[in-house]
Image: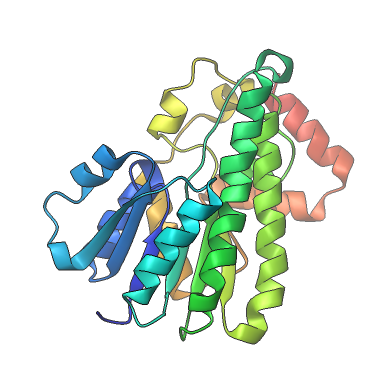
Length: 256
């Protein structure tokens, strides 16, 4: 089977889809997962059958996650080299005008989904030299973003889970980290019916392949948090050293 195997969630679209194609082309064996089976079939239609396994999976469903991870890893000598958590959803709009069920869904998928995959993937990750967990976080994890309250909150949670497990799992030889891009031109963003002022000010300048380039760097040279793009890297450094009132002022201005 080879040592380079990975489970990718949300592989039917966006960043995870682009990463799946890149890793496949580099010789990795992949478990591509998504709730949209048709999108996975379209992605893998020209791939050799022995290079991947396709799973229809809802990351918010713990039993579905456990079944998929167990099935895949047991085919790979109980090992898992990379768990890439990318499945996520977004809703832009005023908090009170967004349904409570939508808010809950964002937290279930973006946060509980990662908890599910990490919990059930742990036993296989710890069996694998060089094992990594890479979570898709966001620039929205640095300060709460108006019009994206639940999404921003979910990415704060992802950042917290990442930081905690990075320390906890060092003793098991598992690297845990995250990728923090600003807004990326994906279908998840373009399908929104509302726009946030911060998007208009900062623009959407990144494409999926730009983020994939950073993920490949993360696989080769992991660090706890990896901001994506020069502009956000500078803003991230500013956020780390500046007082909270200054960060608030910046976000307030960007969100006018």
